[in-house]
Amino acid sequence: MALHPQCKAFLDQLAAMGGKQLYEMTPVEARATGAALTDLGVPVQEVARIENRTIPGPAQPIPVRIYRPVPSGTLPALVYFHGGGWVIGSLDSHDRECRALANQSGCAVIAVDYRLAPEHPFPAAVEDAYAATRYIADHAAEFGIDPQRLAVGGDSSGGNLAAVVTLMAREKGGPKLAFQLLVYPGVDLTDDHRPSMLEFADGHFLTRTLMDYFANHYVPKPEDRRNVQASPLFASDFRGLPPAMVITAECDLLRDQGELYAQKLREAGVPVTVKRFDGMIHPFFSFGGIIDDGRAAHAVAASAVRTALSSAAVAG
Image (cartoon, rainbow, N blue to C red):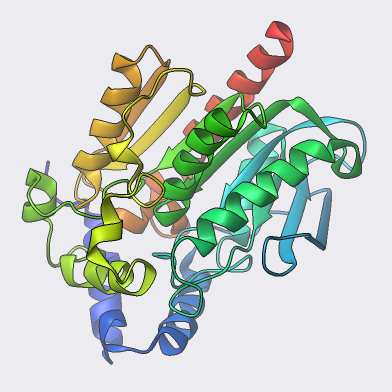
């Protein structure tokens, strides 16, 4: 399928803005530019209750934002890690997606503001993501959530972190996770050969040059990029991981590695659903205000989270 007209219009709009490419900017400049694109995202939805707080982290307190679709009561929860190549992104950049996911899933969504590279290179983001997930599970009553109905999720680099956290939770004996939502996850920082990496290397927002920019800041030592905590696709054993939904975009260089990750989960006996959105580009999940399938993907993701955590309640 050809590039969707709404995606082409979005890319044309970005091109018309002119200026430097993200990979030509300093990380500080790139963060400001990324933040300026937030207004192109999904419409802001009202949520019954939002709370900002910090929790203990391995190096410094970790800011989190809690979205509750209802003001009280014990809810299932999705711990969410934002995208941005481990270099850009924040609680604010993905605020709209988290609001939509909370309202449509009926679950609390707890967004984690992990440390960013290059100021905090690998494995700082991983350490924060796991520590936050563990703290939330261990202090579920503080958050008004059910620790038996806990999922992790994220988009792009956030999908990478969610996948890594499930592997760490298995190896470390907890926390118990009921589901993983992986939205066009980057799971192999060594990928330079798969068809989608070659076909969509340029001209589709997330380019190969931009991916290299992110990887060079996040994992500056190439030899570390095969580390399972950087590239979870290299895990030797996928058994015993929580059920997953993997969402991919057809015109995205990360498409093939995300779908291969789903295949490895399935081969290990992990229940997994893959949903590829035809004609879509990498950031479509974040731009549902101008790309209809972005909103459709939110509905698909939220439904999967809701169903999985409802099943976890029954199983529990």
